[in-house]
Image (cartoon, rainbow, N blue to C red; front, side, top):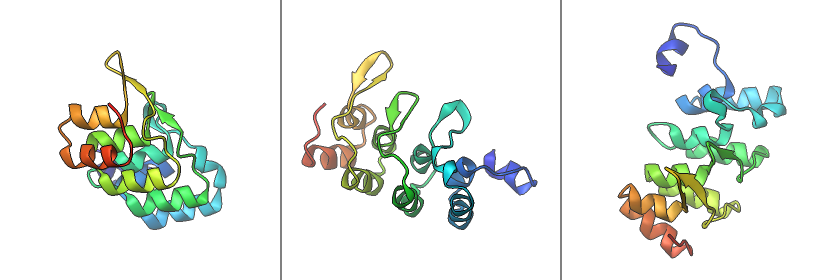
Length: 140
C-alpha cells in the first residue's frame, strides 16, 4: 500500500522511505534534517524498526541510520528492532544490531508474556535466527 501511494505522488516520510528501501531518499532526508532519526511512523513505530518490517531486510539503510545516530535500543510496540528482525528471520540485520550494542536478551511483552528475541525466533519457527541468537548468547 505504501508503495502504491508513493507511486501516486503521496508525500513520503523517512519511515516510509525506509520501509520501501529507498536508500537514496533516506540518506537525503537524514542529511537535510538529522532530527528525523527520532521520527516515528504509523502506530508510533520507530524509524530503525522499519528496516526489519519490509519484505526484505533493509540492511544498508539500517547501517546508515545507526552510523547517523539512530538508537539501537529504541522500542516500537514494546519491542526492539532485534525482536522484530528475529520474528522475520533477518539474520544479517540481527548481526548488525548486535554488533552495534543491541541486547540479545532484551525482553518485550508479546501476547501477554515476556519474550526475548530468541524466544520469538523459536516461536515463529525462524530456525536459522534461533541458531544465530543462541550462538550469540541468547536465552529464551
